[in-house]
Every structure is written in C-alpha cells, then in structure tokens.
Length: 240
Image 1 (cartoon, helix red, strand yellow):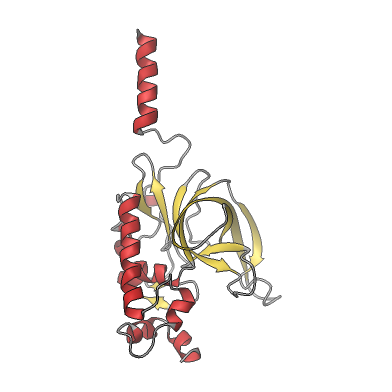
Image 2: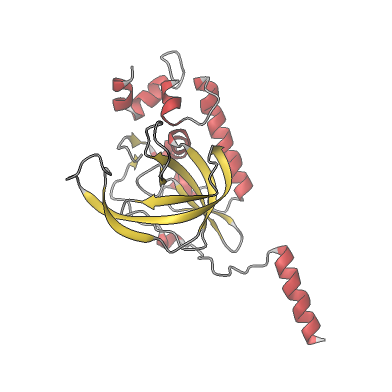
C-alpha cells in the first residue's frame, strides 16, 4: 500500500508541477549583482532613466526570447571591442550555450545560440536556468551573419529568470521598476512586453521590434521623438 501511495504521489507531482526544483538554481534577491552606476545604461553607453529601462530594453533589442542555459559557461579574456581595435581594452567574457524555447519579439530561427556576458557586474546564470533575455545580435552590421548574442544592457537590466519552484519571473536587476515584475507568470510578463512594444510601434508607425531601425523610424512629428532624442543624443546627431 505504501509503495502504491508513493508511486501515486510521484506521478501527481510530475503532472501538476509540484515544488521540485530538480537541478535548477533558485534565485534570491541577495544574488543581484551591484551595478557601479546609479543610472540605467544601455550597453552602448546612453543614459536611461530607471522608469524607462523596461521599455528601452525592448526597443533596443534585436530579439526577446526564452531559453534554457545548457552548460556551465566558458570564460576567457577578450577585447571589449572585438577585432575592431587590436590593442583596445579587454575583459573577462563568459560564453554560454542556450537552447531557444520561445521567441517573444523579433526573430531568431536558431534552435541554439551562444550568449556572452561581458561585464563583471552581470550576474552569471547557472546551467539549467530558464531565462527571458533581451538580446542584441553580434556583430551588429546587417551584412554579417550573427555569431553570438549579448544582453541589450551592460548591467543586469535585460536578464530575467523563470524562477523555480513556481516558475515565476525574477529580475536580475536591483532596480524597482524591473523587480516589480518579480512573481509574475511568464504569460503576464510576455503581455507586458507586447503592450510596451505596441505603444512604441503605434507612436513610431513602425510595425516591428525596434532596435536601431526603430529609432530611424522616429521622425520629428512623432510624439516620442524628443523623448528618445534625450536618451540617445549621439544616435540622433549622427542620424538626423
């Protein structure tokens, strides 16, 4: 009788998703890495207000996807600017293989991608983690094939875990506008992404995920023009 009961409970947990984390890491707020600046900053160096970080994560991304970390990551020292400057500054880069499960915005046809973390204050994920990532294709030039992806922001603002045992959103960032999504279901988080992207698409009259192309779509007649010109001054000076 006890054996039958144990078997029944095991099957019940399998189908109902009991609080069994398996080998997946459970994140806590204490693991959020410190960011050296008090202001939000996209990887290209533009200052973004905290309350606009979620929105600009989406707009600056080439793709937003859900994926599972497949390995422990491989770290090595690489030039920050890649092959552009031979004697440029270097940093320790950690590369992970990621299995793509779902694409929430943009496009990615690959089943597996290489994800690189460049900055020491970015929280490194664990093998088995399920993540929601706002990503930029590397290299960024459209005439070259995608070699790997990096988080859209240089800190933790564009990386979220689907945290066991409840499989709810956990922000790697410490910023309150992003930790506000903690505890949401993935479907709720996806809806917030879609709503924010729709707001930009409507204002810019641009039907795709934004990235640089979306910024090009902002004209002086757009209600978002002055706002984003303030966030990305160097971009608008080069691309009037």
